[in-house]
Image (cartoon, rainbow, N blue to C red; front, side, top):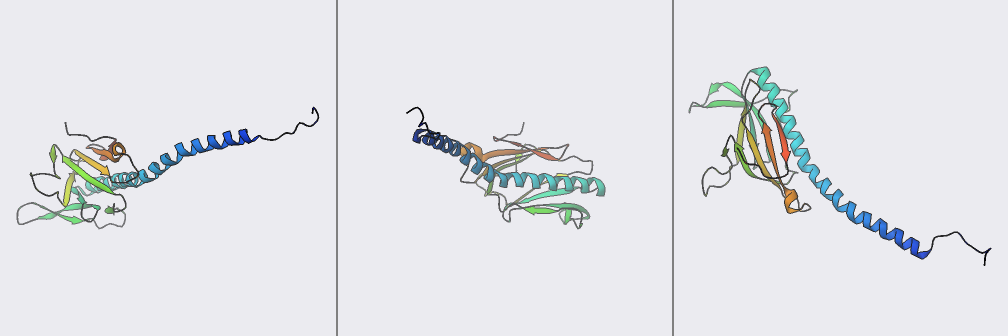
Length: 190
């Protein structure tokens, strides 16, 4: 039988190869799925930071206070600029920014996010009084000197494909760079 040696894969070698491919697929596919779902909340963070850059530029250029508004009912974030007028209550009046060069809003309806806390300075603006429903709108200010109020957002990504720990994240606003930094756990004001 010395001359009848064939060069081919045995059944055992083929089975081992298929098992290895199956193991790699079982590890890779769930990770890809969670990365794809995380994209929606990454898009939200990216859009939010872009909007904040536009608000900062507008506040410094116009020398007027800008207000960043989170509308939780319509799932929209927008910016407004202070006007010279005041409301009858004496509070500042704001108007939408009318500029073809400045992004003034975006919606986050695709990102299935639940806002748990919205800390401005040290106060949780989402839950100001016991027993009260969560607010429909919350806002913070960007000043003409290029600073903003300290803000911490604690958010749960309601995506079903993420584990319990992967769902929680915080966005902490740097009041000097006016950009949110993401953390993978809930943060509290100092």
